[in-house]
Length: 392
Length: 181
Image (tube, rainbow over all chains, first blue to last red; front, side):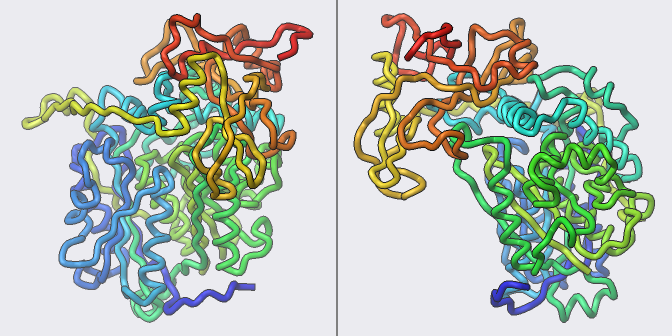
């Protein structure tokens, strides 16, 4: 049963666009935002004149190397002489962008919203990893000389221990997603690889190896969201945003059990309740769980309650999450396959579900009939969970 | 198949260098962070070789690292409580790379330590803990999982080298057999 929240307008996604995802693109951040926006608008058959409000998402300013990146990106996102808001919850930003766009429309404030995610990580060199150093607590964490991958490795190790999952079990996610991405025209890291390739790749912070991680990317993605009246006018196949959820856990990440993503379960419950979904493991047809690391997809499948705790590795091995499986996950290739320009990556996941639900994904289209879908993103110091539930 | 068009032009690093108008810039920003009331006291404690936590009068949990408020009850914390520093390894990894992704000559072992502190149920989701380096354990201990659940205690720097920093603890090391802390 749907929860009784007051919504002035039903909200639909009516268009989506992407740029290439690559290690380094010639285009400036603004150019990328503009390219993705233009694709999204043209796919919806709209122009900027038809757009009431703008939502821009981008992760830490330090990647692009420009402070107040929201303002900087605004004109490339169509954001002048209009209400514009910039959204930032670390890696969770990408799915927060459509969530924020949703309440712009649901509240009745705007009839149409252009929602844009952009990231240009290649500016930071030789490697954006150095920029991540400023994420850590300056008093207790930074003196230890941490690398961002430490916390993910710590989390992965804990998950492996509690769930008795092996490196081989987890590497299968990377194999699946990179394979799925072979059919994605924007993909940066599509490849036909084996579990062995993952296990033989450079060891960064054991248990995390090079092929366990999504690449460093430049790219942008955009969506057009509209109220029901507009959506019915511009398309025969609107994809409804049925629920949104977002939760932050606290930043004392070494004061909680890392084996289970509590932040995500709370966000997912919020979104499912709004969407009237009571048994997500039965009702969701296709999912885009956030997969910057391979273990993270399994972690998030469990946090989204699409599998029982610790059950995801076993189901993965059985092909349950394949494109032809019972509950395909990351059918487009996810971050591991398509790439990870942070805020753009989350928007790309929602765009993929938009195409899947409209049966427009071509070679990437999942085999089963699809009606309901869920995407999530995750970020900050392991504590931000953002969720969007879509349906046709 | 959607998306039909994906704009963007990939360039290699060499191509970038050949472009006109490429700007290279290193920001110079300096900061001096205050540790705040609770952490300042905690760091003073480390200098004396003690690990201090703060008690929440409402849920009776001792929070390590200490904060002036309990985030669960949202009330001010009151008394200072010293914990032994002993605890169990919650998770541990081996880092082969440094801050800027450079390869390290000697890999480091890092872990999260669930400290023995009053008020937390055994195996609770939230716990008192620290994140630090581990010593006296091998890479194989980490890979095989032997290290997880291992009892450890802090190895302190010599008194004259302590400055009131998290690094006054050199690392956490395994307890000796039958050692009681």
